[in-house]
Length: 295
Image (cartoon, rainbow, N blue to C red; front, side):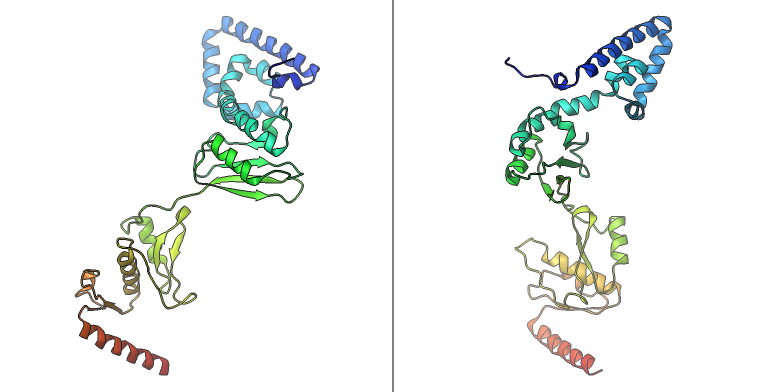
């Protein structure tokens, strides 16, 4: 026999017979209720649609087959499960067809048993979980490549967990850091205000993670290296302003004379742009360092 065998053909005969009987009863019940009280039927269907997730979860706990069709009718059941059926048809089954061979799984395997794809898997916080076969006789690179291509994913990470009785891999989107972290943003201002004196914030990373320089734990020395326009002056200005906020003294040696004009004439800042002034200030800084070490 040629052609693709439908998934329901692998179910036991008694289950297929029970579903057909329940389906016929549901269709009859739906038609009967509609002829008796059409307005009530429409209102009930609308109420079920508005609360489809809760209704579907309740019905599933008692058996998704006969309970659904007998309780709300075939039409209501189809409406409630439309999103899930679309997810299964458009994403879950195609992914199963793409990776079941590399994983060493039979084609007749129900993809819902090992593929866990949320309806909103394109969101930043969504996770995809794939239960792996215990033999682990497959190529991780092949699986990762087929998953990203079939689901059209970009910027994702694969977190492999081969240990234990139930090995799996979790697929997550790699969060990108914000393009800009403006100080006028109330959240950024709050983070800067709460930062310790010795750990100025220089930016925000993925997921709102703070990027800072710990001058006590790491090192009192900082090297900022980047090409033209890479943000060197902005980073140093950010550090200097936070140090001034905590009462520190700042010395700015601007040999280019155009990098830090903001510091000229500011309280707490010694701004030098002439070679002679820079020389004198370096001598003074060395003297202050020696005094602090002796004291």
